[in-house]
Image 1: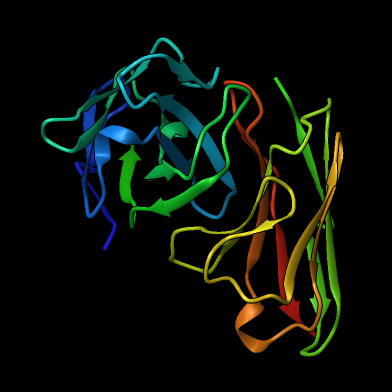
Image 2 (image 1 turned 180 degrees about the vertical axis):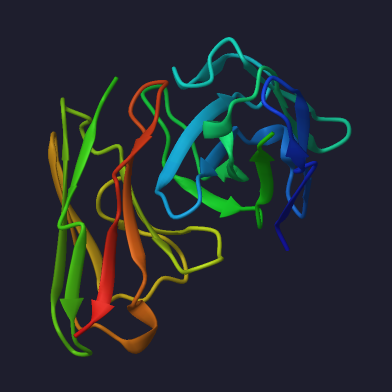
Length: 123
Length: 107
């Protein structure tokens, strides 16, 4: 059974840093592209970042570029999101998601999602 | 960046109704369009990928169509468990974006 389990969410002050983790199981993690998606309270979904199965290329939404860093450790079946210079507007549930498939021109959706981890940025 | 405009933002509907949700991209995304269902407190669930392909395990009352910039999600006969929020997502190129969501409410 495919499972994605996020951890690392916390209450953090503005300007602080946090590292989220996503533990994958039930599939060959090293064969799949992965993304982070977030959802602010009562709001819609926002895609944040994508990492290829091998670790590169990597892409970011403009809203987090330069502040967030995605990485993965295929030996540990784990995906990470390092979040620096956190802002109040980064408050959200953060999901890791597996890409169903990928072609040269794009992706075929996220077929598995974790349960999410809550990040609250507040003083 | 490609913007996605989803409509309507909410819809009052009844069990048995045929429901149509539309999504428009700001530029052509060929068929790199996916649809998700999300229930409160839960992660999104993939319904349709590549504009019209039904994800495994999803009931056949869900269907998708479109290409280029205009896309549609149709629920042929709404069931009680379908009251949820639906999102489109474009996945063309390297930067992905979601529509703002459509919430189906009971009439």
